[in-house]
Image (cartoon, rainbow, N blue to C red; front, side, top):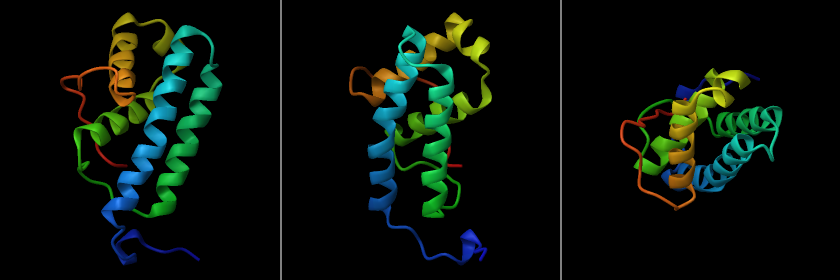
Amino acid sequence: MLKLVSSQPDVPTERIARHVADHAPALALSMLGTLEGSTSYDSLKKTCTEHLHDWWQLSVPSGTPASGYESVYWYLLHLMESLEEHQLLGNCFIQFRVTAGAKFLLGMGEQPEKMQGIRP
């Protein structure tokens, strides 16, 4: 049975925050692993697909993230969804951006500037 997101009751903020807290470190580690060669690109893409699937299960309407941390998570997830393997592995600027965002999600750096994501 199909249900419209607009007909769903609001998802509690805590559930949204828990989703991001649970998924962001795994995404960051997968991204860094792919850049260093210890994780395959296909594995990274699978991680992204799983994260989006889990998100859609919450039935949250798209919109503005609640924090800078959540914003960077969505930015990186959307970026990974739009890149082919050669674009990620062959572009030093993209690698720099991905590394900075991933390190921030792991608590190893400051929030990168101009890394504004939105909820899908």
